[in-house]
Image (cartoon, rainbow, N blue to C red; front, side, top):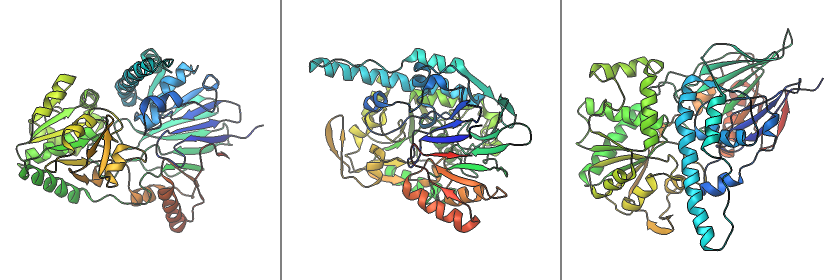
Length: 469
């Protein structure tokens, strides 16, 4: 009989594009995640995406969570012939409805503009590689599952989701492979959240695995403690207010935006927020916040209690100075506000979205501040700014960077190095260990620490590598 293998087709030596192909001894084929690569021009990136396997040959998709670097190529997968179930949590299915439609809409609008340019140059237009109908097919193929409930994917594969504490609905994937007495357990961490993270419950600690696949985004660094970060947030906001500027916060629509709103709501509740007007300038983040409101009972009870203390029943109403900006005209009107605005807008790595338009209006003014609250992958505009670029191009024009650039690490939705080590250390006996979803430098450092701490055998696969269970 053939061996069971896993092949790493994304998030291997990189942070985005999570995709791992599990081929069972029976010949059944499953992928863990189907993520989009991020960075660079969106049209070029998506038009160039392809699968090193036949989507029609897959029997199932197991999805850890809704972030696009884990789910964004699902519409392309169904377009290329995948017809099996997409197994995920119920909250993840709710978020996919918003995120995949939004992502497809942005891609199709960008492609339309690109095709106008091609037409002017006498070049042939490009056809879309997927469309909104493919998103609808994805949603019809979703099969929501609850945390902690075993589910037989096939006779020889059992699935159980556990709370990863990363974003709403995020899951650690536990797979029991084989039947009868000869079984193996594969645990895939997905993206792990931080212990004590705002709104999220702590990641579930498991104890048994033969193969452990763990993310390593922050494998070489720690986050500042939350108290220090909130002190820094107060200082940055107050200093910008004193200078007569505004604050721009690039934010992922899922998880990060809701966490920022909660923190600002707490500052307001405690009388520690200057009289800012806060703008959530992202239709997707607004829609996601409403999904979070529908799932308040799944979030951290102590944090949600703070809403009830001020008689609020949603994250949006927790911050009375919040303005929800949905249409383009309202977004453009923010440009007329010269000071006193906190603008939370997508995208989180500044690869697109409305944040780039706000940069165009304000990043050259030294009264203003940009606050980064999440990881910035290589090749993104956000990474250039964090690394200290003095000038960037926006919409084909150069802009000097004079705004204050700050990074607040505690807002990250990823576990830091010590939390990753602690989570991995819960497994006894020590499993075979594979690091995914991290840049090479971070993975080398984390692998060394795991070997020193636990004597673990740690592997860092490259894209296309395969191992046998």
